[in-house]
Amino acid sequence: MDIQLINSAGEASGNLPLAETVFNRDFNSALVHQVVVAYMAGGRAGTRAQKARSDVNGGGSKPWRQKGTGRARAGTIRSPLWRGGGVTFAARPQNYRQKVNKKMYRGALRAIFSELHRQDRLTVTVDLGLEEPRTKQALALLTRLGVSPDQRVLLLTDQIDQTLALAMRNLFNVTICTVETLAPTTLVASERVILTQAALAKIEEWLS
Image 1: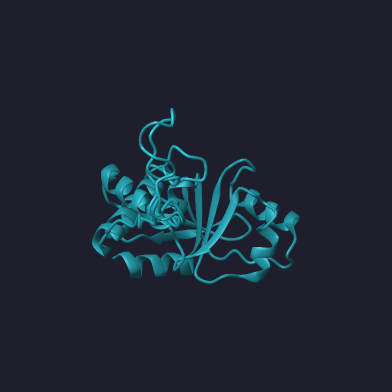
Image 2 (image 1 turned 45 degrees about the vertical axis):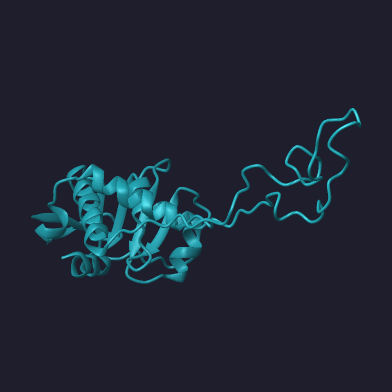
């Protein structure tokens, strides 16, 4: 199982073998969905909080007697029916994290990478080096790699290149990340994934 290796000029530089265990797996949509949902749930802060009637100050005594006043009976001024009272179903801090073990997480990434390869949305290049941090050079590089300006692109490298990051930061549809910071949500949301040869080696070592 091979993939064509492309240099920064957009020219073919031979074929590169791919690990069957990483790039030739069936697409398990249920597993991918579970991992993506768990990843997004783990990013929720869950810090919302409101005061219930027991948390609001005051209200220790009955506002008026039970009968004879002509008004509705009331036991506390901190009732949810009163202005300044507590909330009926008050929000509490909550942990939204879901358990996903390493085997499931890596299996989902293998399924996503395999599907990207099957759909010809995966490109491997020798490097993504640029001479200057200029947006014009970044656009030219993407054009040579066969990427249209309106596509959502993920550039996957083995380490952050400051020149590349500065050149791409004005392109809102381009995301740069390393193998260590790769998220399943970023992979799923990308129409094209371009990774360097060094990043490919790290991915195969990690997911094999």
